Image 1 (tube, rainbow, N blue to C red):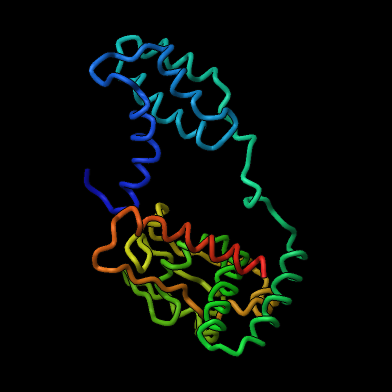
Image 2: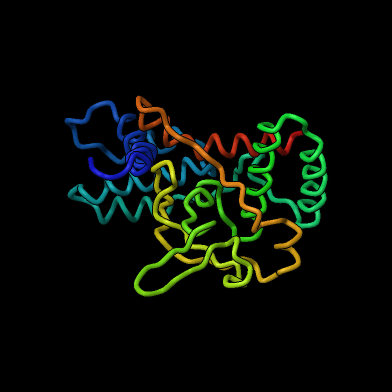
Length: 237
C-alpha cells in the first residue's frame, strides 16, 4: 500500500480492523456474519459509524450488493456516544482558563517547562481562533516566513503590518511527516482582532517533534494523539 504513514494508519483503523474480525477470508461473507462483525462495536459510537465504511465496501463486491446496501442503509449509525474529553465549553470558560494558565506559566522558573507550557497555550489559542487541531497547527507554512505559490504571497503570521488579517496556510503535511488529511489551504481566523490579541496568537510557539531515525510508522502517527494528551495535562494543572 502506498501513501504516508498516517494514510496507512487510517486505512488500518477503518478497514483492516474490520476485515480481521471475519473468521474466513476465503469464504464469501454472509449478511449475518457482516452484522455480527459490525455489531462487535457498540452502536452509537464513532467506531461503529466508521465500521460501516468497511462493511459497505465488502457489500459492493458481492453479487447481491444492491440488497445488502439497502439493508446496511437502514442501520442507524448516528454517533450518540461521545468521549467525555471531547465535550465543548463556552468561550467565556475557555478565556477564564486561558488567563489562569497563562499567569501560572509566567511563574514557572524552569525555562524548558515554561516553554512547553507556552507551546500548549499557543496551540489552544490557535484552536479557538482558527478551529485547528494540534496536528493542523503543526502544518502551518507561514508562521514566521513568507509563503508563495502560483504567484500569490502570504506574509508571516508574525507580520502584523503586511498580514493584518492573520491569514495562515496549512500544508498537506505536518513538520514531522504525517498528513493533515484536509489538503493545503489558506485559512483566516475568527474576525475578532481583540480576541486574537488577548490570546497572543501571533506570538508563535510551535509544537515541535522530531521522530527518531528508527521510529515505527505507527508511533509517528500517534503524535497528534500525544499532542492532545499533552493538552489534557496542561488543562488539568
